[in-house]
Length: 66
Image 1 (cartoon, rainbow, N blue to C red):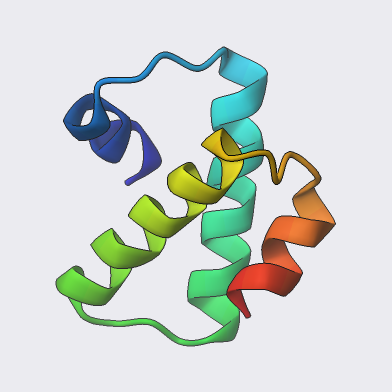
Image 2 (image 1 turned 60 degrees about the vertical axis):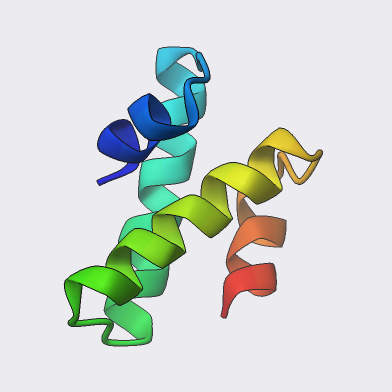
């Protein structure tokens, strides 16, 4: 999901950055039991947006989105 949203926002991120965002996405979507496609897409957008705006710590991203 993260990679597809990156294409939409037309940004480049390294493999490690994408992996971090994907881990956050997997954790938050599982913990919050996000089921709908729209909610999953919104979560991915929020993770990317937050990361791009300086929230680079994995645990901080998780806390922000929980």
